Image (cartoon, rainbow, N blue to C red; front, side, top):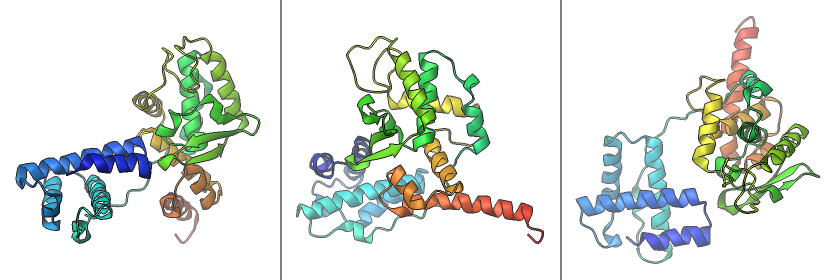
Length: 294
């Protein structure tokens, strides 16, 4: 399979994110290894829907979750669509492939009381890392941005006069997100502390490690996980939980769904509508507690 041509197409024509490219490439290499081991296929034209189904069955027999299997199927769909476009195949075998059903899981979020505890000043040290960690958590909650977006924020992306931050999202689309006076004060406080650490070059990247290097995703994940463990018992304690928390709290406080969609950088409203389920659950709980006939 000519995976490299497809990966180049994703990078330079579709301009998808680096994380998506890695996922697609990993899925296709895994599928290619399966073909080599079980079918000894050299020509991509020999791949049919029955072969693809056998791979899906093997994945599920190895306890791969339906959600992960569906992601791999999505990778194959994109790949074979590319092959059709390049006229390397005449029939698309994916048209007869059915994705396994997944259970709809509501996004987990931290309640307002938990967030109030998290942003108590006593929670953070007053050194560089403490102030940086507090800003990271507050930016996630105040803007709803993704982990990949946060690590790439530049100081020049912040418009202090208009209280806006420019974010580079999926498919290299930029959006502007407003922020509060509280967050602006914290950013200024962090920038003053940032001057005290040794930086190898005059980098414009906002968030740095204690050694002056650009911060990386695994470190941010560990920071968020550490602090969330102190305030919540929910299963997932990740940056994405703070994104869910931002959206859910906005919706619960009367924000328009379309406005939340734009802030989150969603392409379709359907991706944002998942947060209405949390709101409905909250309303149902209030109804059962308050209504005499409930």
